[in-house]
Image (tube, rainbow, N blue to C red; front, side, top):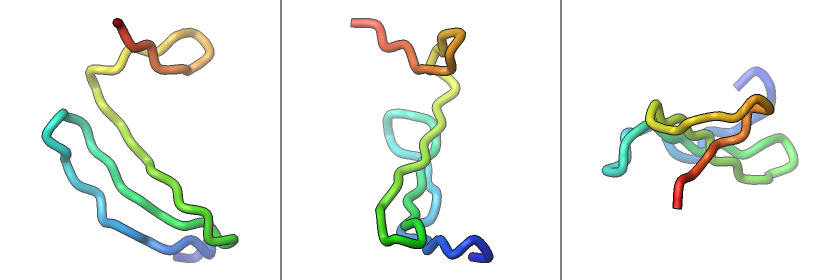
Length: 51
């Protein structure tokens, strides 16, 4: 990738919904990138999980 990141796992749709993918930044730190349309967000952009 042009930014120096490395794809660790291609995006897919897990059984619990949404989408996820995994990358490593230029320092080798692994990151999960996830999106789920069912997640509610607060005004600061944090996910709200109901208990």
